[in-house]
Image: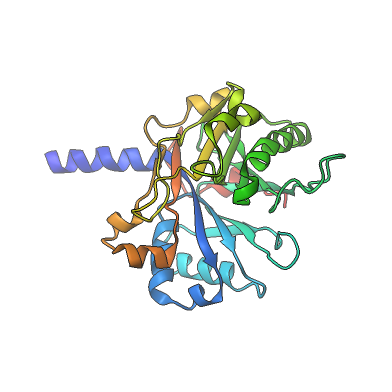
Length: 294
């Protein structure tokens, strides 16, 4: 009876939260797609999450996201879908952002590719944010925006600060209050010095809450300790319904009993995540309440 009670307690905690994750899968191209062991790890990491942002996808043939979707849906009764940006970047170097999400938990209402054409401040981003408005009927907030970013390390201070301009643009465009900023900010070590934080609006305004802090280590290498990957929240309701203590780094190396060499073959970054409290158990009927506008 005790074991049954503990099972119910654990199960209840799982189904009453929405897990949102971010992962820079370093140089995710065709060679990595063809490596079955690496793909198995990536699929396992994604399948922990209701929403997963993937970065550093290098795919000029549109193979990686359909391939991942097939793998994900082949192993789970809870179906995933995805949205993916165009190839972004300057000159010949291009990457994509992709969001994989569970259809029984959320849906995508709208997407917006930030144009990065602000007068006098054009081309501020190396890879312009691919902004997504999610509807999540099981959560208290009901809907929220995710603004992803993968900065160029040498331009991290400027690009993180420029996220504030993206915020103002999207807030006006969609008239929404709940925002999640996440991704590989390169926000630490040599790329953002302590004295530079005062120049970053997303940091010096108190209504933006950084839930992955400056002491965190999101790198796989044992010789580094840098909080490159971050999650920042804005919106009183969103912040108040975040599950206490849920913001963390997922150390897949330890979780899957991998060597450092094996883990680095997957990525040199660990995923970061947090959870939102939900108001009801999933009934598999989210699509009834979730009208996709894309």
